[in-house]
Image 1 (spheres, rainbow, N blue to C red):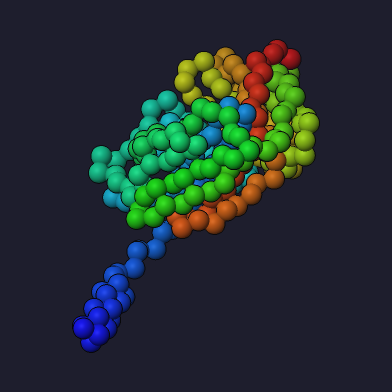
Image 2: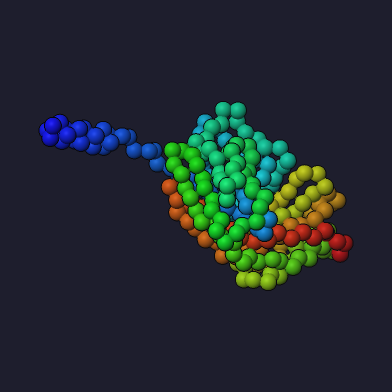
Length: 224
């Protein structure tokens, strides 16, 4: 009996050692938090095509995106990401849309990302975040100009120019508190600013997760 027992143990170890390792993951995530919502922007997670959701986040400062109201995705696009869970609330992932939880964080909030054979769990507690005081107007030449101050330190901000139709120019700026846009009179109607506290990064099994915290404010464009 003792010999049989030893053989079983060795066989079990051999089977476990032969399990193939999971393929490497090259994805990353940008998590944008404000007082009432948490949005998750996955990156580099698609196979067999490309997809551009109607909502997107320009993570690199100095870049802008032109957003439309209709996502554009290849029919054959696939992803191994499955779902996101925040404090018990669950969202299935679709490449054509941005996972967004409409809830306020608490001191014990946790975000879980499931997919690609892995599970990543990240503490996401509520923290103080900047709120901007925004002014939006047109200068003498008709260019929309946004100027803001913040109640807490902020190095970067997401500045969006909104139109009468569902369209948006979204820019990520750094080290400034003003932004001038090219005029396309009269479709532009308002400006949105989200000033961020310093970004933090958490490494997970599914890739790095960058956390951006900042409340969003709006202002209607006024005449010069």
